[in-house]
Amino acid sequence: MNGLGLEQQKPSLPYNPQDYLSGMVQLPPWLRYKRQQFYAYAFDATPNTPVNQQQAVTLEGDSFFLLEGINILSRTITDSDLNTLKISFSDTSKGVNWSPNSIVFPNVSGRGDCTKYLSHPTLFKPSSTLLYSINQSTGSVYGSLIGRKIFGLSRDEANFSMKRIWYQYDILIGPLAYSSSNYFPVQTANDSDFYFYKFYSAEGIYYSKTYAPLLMTLRDATTNKNIFNNQTDVQTFTGQQYGLSPTVTAGTLTGKGLSFSVPRLIRRNSTLIVDVTNTSIVSSDPDFGPANFTLEGVRVFD
Image (tube, rainbow, N blue to C red; front, side):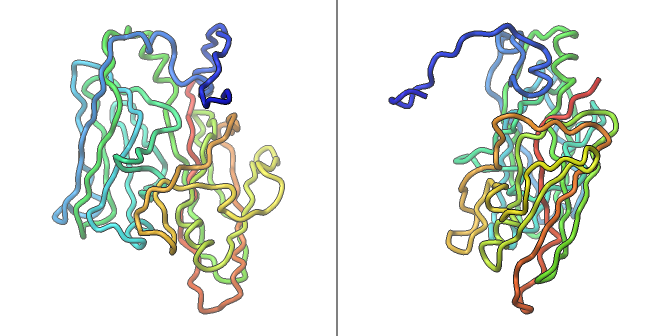
């Protein structure tokens, strides 16, 4: 950036397909120059929708769809809602979920005035069916999948673009009582490498602000390498899309997941371990968790 806040012109470099797969390049050049238009698919759940019932969003058949953002709004937003409302997505055309578990709303979605943009856009075939389910039936939930219709992709262009998908690994933490520590693992898939770009923990941030600092480290146990060297408050190393804070209105949109300047490569079939310490010394404080720590990035398939 220059002194006026304008981005400096960067020298153009030759396109390297691996840069797209690793997420260093958001879109391959051929996709940028295809005919395209903004588009959004809406979805919802009502009080009459059974808990965790799968519902479908069917994409239109005239184009590919490039998913760039997810927004979800609950009509009864409270701190307790945002701590417990979870959603899961899957793409039946690829047979792949977007995460191994359901994810809490503040880790996966935003709202129109603060859209949750994916760390990396993901391409879907025409006429794909996307399934979603929500773990509540007490209020109305409205959502939108925001992106672009892309026209005129060849089979080879589409197949290469879809070797990379946006993904969130979820580590379930707790319950963790006051003055205690524990390790919590997550296993990456055996069919794809993972490039780690963002880190979320809305529930961890809320607990750390409200009761006592939660300290954590993150380690790749397969390579025996730390991702940071020592324990630190979760507020310094994770983010959230919604604000869960005792000093702001519940549901305030305050930011985003912590974003890395360059990705951390996690190989397939690796084990990541989060070491968490609850520093509260007050026995009446609630246990922390079960809660979600969410790692966002891209899975890359052969």
